[in-house]
Length: 222
View 1 (cartoon, rainbow, N blue to C red):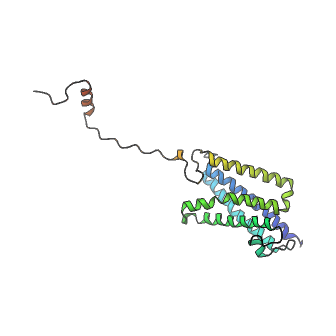
View 2 (view 1 turned 90 degrees about the vertical axis):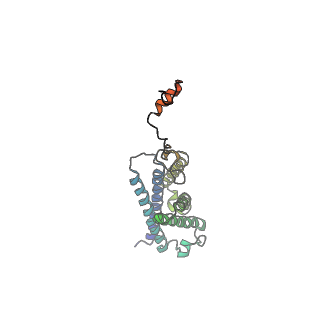
View 3 (view 1 turned 90 degrees about the horizontal axis):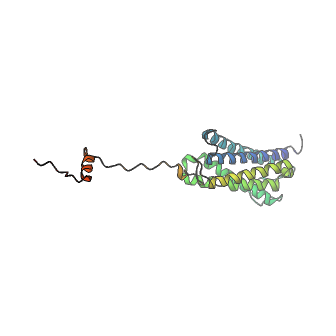
C-alpha cells in the first residue's frame, strides 16, 4: 500500500468538501433570493442546498479521518480539534478547525429547525458566511493543491460568485424572495384587507341625491 495513501485521501476529500460547501452556499442564495423565478422549483433548489450541505459534512469527516491516519504529517486528535495545538501550520489548522465547528453548528441547527425559534435558526445560519471564508483561507494556507492553477481559478470564481450573490441578497428584493434575515420582503406581503364599509340602507342614494338638488327629503305633505 502506498505510504502516502491517507495523505492523498485527506487532500482529495478536503477539495471535494470545499466544493460541496461552495455549492451549498450558491444554492442557498438561489433559495433565498429566488432570482431564477419558478424554474427550477423552489423545493428542488432547497433540497439540493440541503444535500450539498450534508455531503460537505461527510467529506469533512473523511478529510479528518485521512489526516488522523496519515503518517506523512502525523497529526494527533488534539491537533485536529483544538486550535493552535498543532506544530504543523498552526494558524492554517486553526482556520480549518474553526470552520469545522461552524459547519457542525449550521448543520445541527438545520436538522433541528422545527424545534428552534426561527430567529435563532436564522442567526446561526448566517454563520455560513464566515464558515465559507475560513474554509477558503484554510485551503489556501494548508492545502497542498492551492498552488495548482486550476484550483486557484476555481477558488477565485467561486469567491466572486458568493460575494456577488450575497450583495444581491442584501440589496435586491425579487418577487417571492426573502430579506437579508430570512423574512419575507416587504413587497411580498399580502395587501391589507380593506376596512368593511358601513351597510347601505335601501334608498339611501336616492335621499342623498334629492338633498343635493335642494328638494325636501321629509315625508310628503298631505
